[in-house]
Image (cartoon, rainbow, N blue to C red):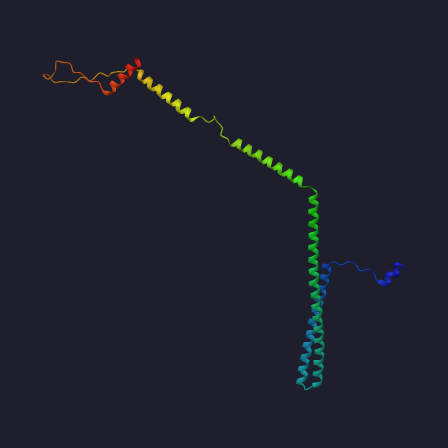
Length: 221
C-alpha cells in the first residue's frame, strides 16, 4: 500500500500542538461563545417586548409566537452555557497538566545537573579540599599571631630587678656615710654687758650626730 493511499485513508498526520497553543485556541472559542450568548439574550429580550406589544393590541396569536421564539433562544443560550462550562473544564485540566509537565521537566533538569556535578568530584576530593582549607587556616592564624606579638626587648625577671635596685640603694647609702661630716659653726649669741660668762659654753651633740659618729667608727674598724 502506497503512502498516498495511507494518507487518504488515515488522513494527514496532525502537527503537534503545545498545551499553551491549545489553551489559547480554547480562549478564542470561549470568547466566540460568549458573544453568541450575548446576541441570543438580546434577541430573547426583543421577543418579550414584541409579545407585550401584541398583548396590548389584543393579538394573542402573535404574542404566543414571540414567546415560542424566545424559548428557542433560551434553549440556545443554555446550550452555549454548557459549551462554555466544558471549555472551562478543559482549560483547567490543560493548565494543570502543563504545570505538572513543567514541574517534571524542572525536576529532571535539576537531577541531571546534580548528577553531572557529582561526576566532577568525589568524596576524596572533598576531604582533600577540607584538609587544605584547615592547613591554610592554621598557617594564617600563626601569621596573625606573629604580627600581633609586641616589638621590643624581651620580658625581664622582676626578682632580678628588685635585687639590683636593693644593691643600688645600699651603695648609695654607703657613699653617703663615707662622706666627711661638715659641721656648720654656730651663730654667735649676743650677750649684754655684765651678763657674759667667763667659762666656755659646751654644745651637746645631737642624736643624729652621735649615730653618724658610731657608724663611722664601725666602718673604720
